[in-house]
Image 1 (cartoon, rainbow, N blue to C red):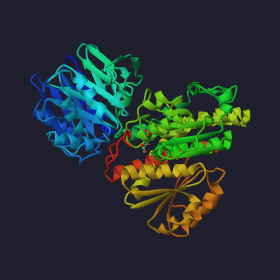
Image 2 (cartoon, rainbow, N blue to C red; image 1 turned 180 degrees about the vertical axis):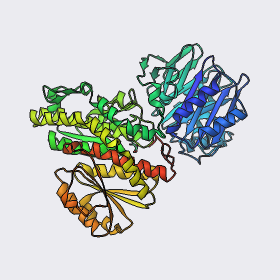
Image 3 (spheres, protein in one colour; image 1 turned 30 degrees about the horizontal axis):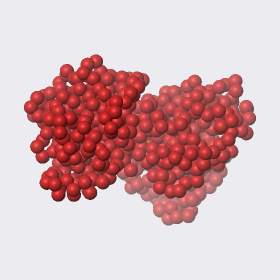
Image 4 (tube, rainbow, N blue to C red; image 1 turned 120 degrees about the vertical axis):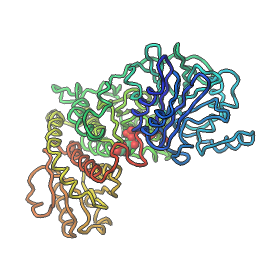
Length: 608
Ligand code: F6R
């Protein structure tokens, strides 16, 4: 959601912070601000809107200093205006706080603080923190922060500076990611490694309940009792090119085009050809334990939930294990039936989604084994899950998830292969799955090479007001994903449905203005889908079909066809997703949307 970056060291801080914010802008982009210790006190600049506006303000009215903190916001409490932008200050402008997350008891605390004479200037929950720190301040910033944090409920990742203890940054984390970057005689704090990757790859991931105290001479991690903690140093294995656009107009397009490599990385080193199975070293489960699993619960949000639905289909078909797929936000507040023999698969690109993390913790509390399918290495879900499969898809910066989706489906296919081979899947079938997985990267490339066809289709449909996406079996979730991609970046209303379910209501929407995208590869349900195509055509709908071979039954029934290569049923979503991602992308660009920063959205939803 929001992004935090801070720096202390010998260098002039403002350009470093602006650069860090730019790299974090994909996480939130409705307002931004910066606070610098200028030798006399705390000086701030804040703007509503994008980082580029903050950059202009800072150019016109420079800030000088070598210690500072900065923030890019995705509003939760209060409108996205200059007043509500972070950093927030106390009345005397001695303390500045940037905050990601939500303080849940903010209104109660605010009332008490106001009764004690504190004057608030913004509508944010964050401002409560700064007044609590002010009230608790004696001589050490970290002690005041600890005192304040003891009073708050909710989630936070914060960075704080003060002219009363001017040489340090105090950062704290509970439920919102934060890390310390270790440079050469300089230290950083950031909510996401991409903010500081240009300067260092050595990081210390903070855990919930940790505080970090940074100055020019080093850093300390302590807990809320001021006890010093030891946390290991990790090395980030991405490079700068991976978080830059590399000649593409948008991160989303770059990430769509990366999929031959990212799918290949998800598979790399994980196929055991001679045994016709997959090797997943992170699963930490013996064969006996895997065989003892009674049921699987998959929990996730958004696109990751869609890949979970595909996983459900795979695991039930091949591993013959009962699977339920739950929205993490619902799962966490139900009374789910989960036992020690349940495997809870938690899918998250970022590894930080608040609902998914909470759902995983709930499953753990109930005794389930948890397995994270995560992209971001070192993220909270990756660290807290009992077992894991990393996607190895590299950083996903585009707010609309693309390459993570295809890698998630591939990771689930690998898991299915492994579990399936332990149960009912023959070596012959296992080999067939392996060959199909190995073929994916070049098949994706073949689709990408024809991106102009989809661009032309986008031109045709860019003015549509609504879209329906229909599919069955493995491609019902693909329909959901295609619709989500379109709506989130083009703002066209789009719905995904199981193709046959259309007759139970949505068919009423079909007329000559309604484009209907059918995901209709030649799989076991193709004939059924073909009948649904007829039903749409009979009502003058405009049919776009993603097919995989010439289909006589569709002759004269479809207006536009895009053919994808053939693969086994369970992997058809990986190939079908590519033209749907491209269609959403090109329509959005042609409608003038900001594809990488769609309105109201942010990457990594770290609030409930
Ligand atoms: C859609 C999208 C979101 C995320 C969802 C879960 O394009 O990106 O729906 O899939 O917020 O995020 P992760 O996978 O990071 O848990």
